[in-house]
Length: 380
Image 1 (cartoon, rainbow, N blue to C red):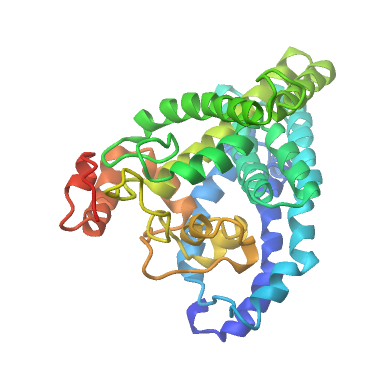
Image 2: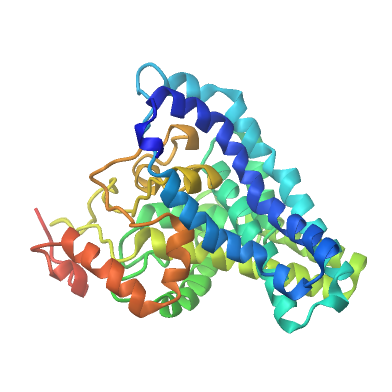
C-alpha cells in the first residue's frame, strides 16, 4: 500500500509516526480498561500479546514496505541534528516509568480476578511492552556520544535489570557480531531454545569481563567505583527494593519477572537479527569488516515505526553511530520475510523457523558451505 505513495510524503508521515512507540506501552492500560468494562480478566490479560503478535503482523503486511531512504546530501545532515527525534527517545524514560509502576498497580488491583493463566498473561504483556520500549530505546541511546543520552539509556536498561547490555552490546556484540565469539549471534541450525541459555549466561558474564578490561587499561581494579556496571545494577536493585516496599514480596517478584521477560524479548530479537550469518575469516586470522550483509533486515513500515527503525538492522551494524531516523534500507542485505512481530513467534517453533530461514541462509552462502558447518576457511 505505502510503496505507491510519494517518498517525500512518506518521510513526513514517518516523522509523526514514530509516536507509535506509545502503543506497546498503552496496551496493558487498554487491557485494564477493557477488564473494568467487560470483565473476562483472564482473556483480556492476553489481549496485548495477541495484538502485538497477531494483529500487528497482519497490519504490517497490509501497510507494506517503506519506500524511503532519506537523501544523504539534502536530508540526512539536517535530520540527524533535529532535536525532535532526540526528544522522542528521551520521552521514553517517563513512559517506561509509567508502564512499570502502572503495570504493578493494575496487576494488584486485578489480582483476585486472575487465575494462573491470567497472571502469566499480564506479566508477559508488561514484560514484552518493556522490551519494546525500554530496551529498544536504551539500545539506541547507548550508541550515542551525548552524556544525557548515555545516562537515559543506562537508566532504561536498569529499569529492566539488563544494564550489562550497555557494555556488552557496544564493546562485545558490535565487535564480534556474526562470528563464533558472539553470544548474541545464533549459529546455523541452532534452535532458539539452545541459543537463549547461552546468550543469557555469556552476555551477562562478558559485560563484566569487558568492563574489567577497560578499567585495567585505565589503571583501576575491576571492583572500583568507576565500574559503571556496579552503579547500573545498584539502580536495578534500588528499583527492586522500591517495589518490595510499595507492594511487598509480590511487588519484588513482579519487577523481577517483568525484567526477565523484557530481557528475554531482547535475546529473541538478537536470535532473529543474526541467525546463521557469518563474517568470513581472512588469511590474517581476522574476520572481514562488518557490513550490511551481516544482519537480517526487515523494511516493513509499521513495525519499524513501532521500534524506532530497529529492523533496519543491517545499516545499523554497518554504521552504528547513525541515528534511527536516518537508517537506510539496503535491498542487497539479507531480508527477513516478515517484521519482528511476525518472526518472533516463528522463532519459538524450530521446525517452522528452520523451514523458513534455512533456505535463505543457504542462498546467502551459495558455494561456501564451510561457512554453515562452522569451518572457518580463510579467504583472501
